[in-house]
Length: 613
Image (cartoon, rainbow, N blue to C red; front, side):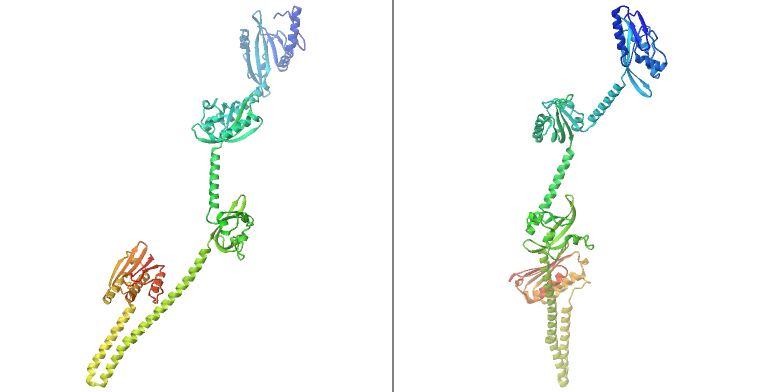
């Protein structure tokens, strides 16, 4: 560039050349430089201004008070703005004069605000020689802020993508994957090489392939729609997993051009749902298939909300009929409402309530009822369980009647036994002892009236009195013969059996094996002794037996008394005139024992009495 002269005015610098044609070019250049944004200046090799624009001149004037003229030495405008970040302009200009264009960003602080400049230093050549440098400093602060905002946004977005547990998947229109977020590895273990180029259906379980096919078809037919889907898929180890995703067709959207899916792992939620469903099915089955009648009623109105099959079978109403009924409909008229019973202060913890109900066919039944407060589909309700105990009540009443009858029979047997015992005692005294004493008195009268026979009569009288005494002793002993607790049950039984052996023609044996005899209650021992004594008396009187076996054996907590004979036997179903067996049964029942009799005519008799000890 050749310059013949340079002139300066208040508003602008003007460049003029010798030749007229260059004058027009200089004017144009001057106009362009004057109206450029930012700072623009041209310097020669001596680092003097050839030209600088209005913005630069005004800034230098404002900051330093100097008016810049062509030919003036270059001023470091950046240092005027912020002297804390000075540039090495001499080195920068020298590099440019050596042929290396310079471009760099520079920041400075102006009024506590950071301002960024894009600085360019461009060599000006003429005939391949560098004769000047064209310099500019453009304020790029807004652009920098926009770039930084974009960078932060991208960083935030990338951070969200890379650290999210959701999987973002992008596929082309053929369904082949070309991008997946890093969570594909963290969640399912897939590396990039495992899925790039593969079809999206490659990872879908066969159960979910129909749903996946429908999804792809809908995406292609309705590009503006957003679809939600649950899919069963495989992870890299081949395990079945569940995902829930949103998918949309963005093939026509610039910058995306893909089928986009956002999926998250819902395997644990699915497992929980399956467990919940299994639990609900279990309790539903327990409710509907329970053999006990069950119903759910509104806690306030007692309206039936649910009934099971057992309830329908028990009462005879259909499920539809129950749903139109209240609990009052099945109650007997004298029964109060269930909530009234449950609210009684003296009955808050009662495990069950006995209620009288009426079936559809008007048949009354007795039901044992349990009621528990529950939450049923968001409302307060009662779960009611019932147990039909009508037969049990009837059986209990029957047992009570039978027990009363049995007690009456036992009392009668005791009275009869006492009367019989008194009768036998009176007969013994009258028919035997009384006759003997009468004979003795007769002998004494003879002795008094006949002195010649006095000695003989007195002797006979003494013999008769002695016989009477022996008879009284025998009678007394048979009445008081009993169990002796001092010597034990076994010794007392042996003593009883030994006396019977001496007086009876049959063979009798005793087997005794009771390790816990010392610990047995004395009253129980005495009862066992009396049972054996009574049955042996029955055998002596009625059996006509040749052999009798008595066995008393302890088996853990069971005590068994067995008395068997080979006598003529009898039919146990026939009514008996005697009270011997009745006495045995009554004695046994006092200790909650049981009596079993096996006998038939000609087959002997076997009696077994059992006690729990």
